[in-house]
Length: 291
Image (tube, rainbow, N blue to C red; front, top):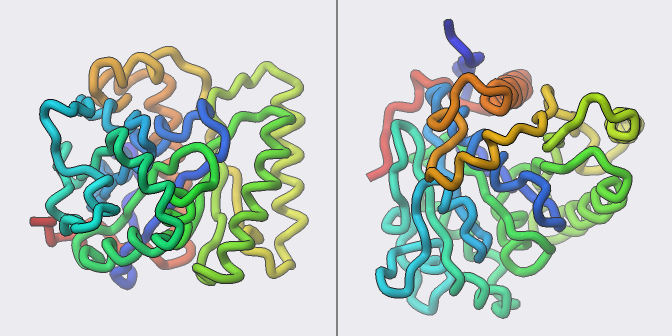
């Protein structure tokens, strides 16, 4: 049985997506890794870039930063003599590549004039990938601004909690600020609800408030007017927490668990949204492989 909705054939275009939340511990990296793995399984050439000095995305692929064994990483893109982006990539499996991070990446936060580093680097691989997912650090510093400057869209992983709503308001304002200057094309297109507890009346109320907020913006000109809550919510599942310690995505670790089912569903929702907008290439058009 095909677990994914295959992308329709449309104009070839690399889509760059920043996964952003200024709060840590909300499922952002877990979503980047497993959504990326699901998109790769659908046939899309997918690149994940770890922009968080904590390097949690890298751990999902069994890569641990080490000063004894330095390797090309996203830090290399921000150095005085940056490496070409293709030299920083590691292939995880068919259709899936990633660029790890390390603690030295934190030094990039001091480069106040470096907002376009990532956008410039990605220009060199626009014909090599269908989707690029940027795992942003918590906060809204230089690294996150780099991601927003390079991205076509933002997806917000968040928990269904009242305080998360306040954080969402601030994040959307940041997106608006970026569209007013550094990146006019940027749009916020999706919210992924993580660690969801369906039995919680508070959680259900927050989800409904999020949906109503975005519905109220449909006829406006704000850059989140087309934003959707991507179904299904990601249920709280211990397997999702265990998988990184084995250096695996959820589909490698336990492909039949609730977490795997949920991320497959979110991938399908995202593909359906992209297909409706005719802006993601089909798997059959994705024949070229990065060097």
